[in-house]
Image (cartoon, rainbow, N blue to C red; front, side, top):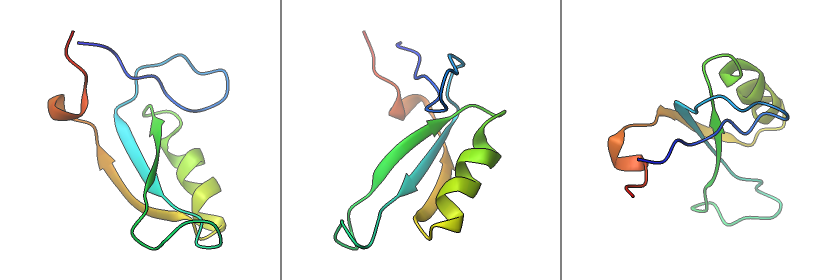
Length: 69
């Protein structure tokens, strides 16, 4: 399995969270973009998206979300 990496700048940690978001000025309501987060950066990335009104959902990454080699 391939490890998914946190989206925080400079972080190389394994991602364990998906932050699903969209920018309503640019995306249709059903469109979801995904940032990945490790435990350490989950709160800061969520806050960044949240204050802008972009965050739609946060959910854990499970085996079905990881790519198999």
